[in-house]
View 1 (cartoon, rainbow, N blue to C red):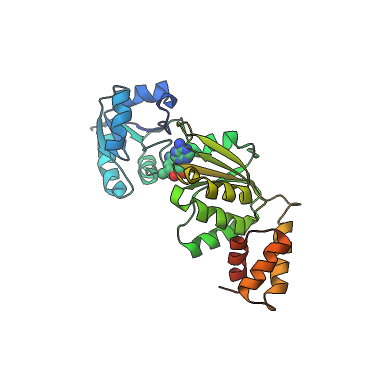
View 2 (cartoon, protein in one colour):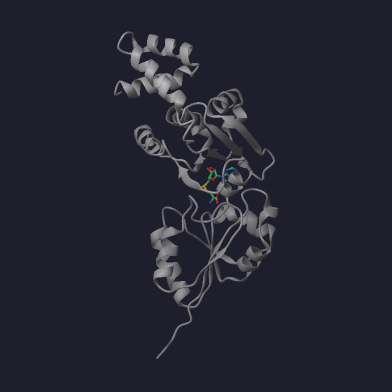
Length: 283
Ligand code: SAM
């Protein structure tokens, strides 16, 4: 009876920006495997050339993951070893690879991690917010209604929360976070980690919104937001007051007048109040 020796699947973290963040083990594995499955083979070419890695590549991205998984599993059954990399950081963390890993494990193939950079962990490690318990939320839904519902579910989350966000959506996201958590909630914005323009801003959501509005650079590059969890005592005291003020004013005044007065009374930003008022009116 023919017994086949299965190949191994290595999940290899690559740098977020600074090439020196690759590990020695990652270089060894990438040089020694039979194939490298890369999210974008053209993007990874630069990294591979830099470290003189000449291993053949095959693409595995969001749109071909299922079809490519069968091909890669076939390679593994033929005894070939494969390394999976993504464009940056750790594969599968808001990146493709979950389907491949799940199927490989189901089929008894050894799946071996080669750990390294991850933007979420890098940001958390410098945020100065509690790290004993945290929750990785990845990208928020883009659709406004879905995002609102999603954030409402996080309203009382006590653990530190980590979000990924695209720069063109950052202001909108900060506004949504302020509406849900209140403008006073502590937040850390980690931008362009390990790169030339690395910036780490710490403040309240309110301050971060102002800073981002006034700094067009803050709306460029790659961004992680680390948001403090809900503290039982601080628990939205301001939100409760703000909601109460709107609750009193809305039946008496037009929406814009109620928002104008509520902003004066509570010191909250008008756009935050406006969204909140619309929500309260069921808009
Ligand atoms: N797999 C990656 C990891 O391990 O972090 C994440 C991939 S996900 C598609 C890309 C998102 O990660 C970006 O939109 C940004 O939120 C975050 N990110 C990636 N590189 C970053 C960097 N250098 N600085 C800050 N955030 C980064």
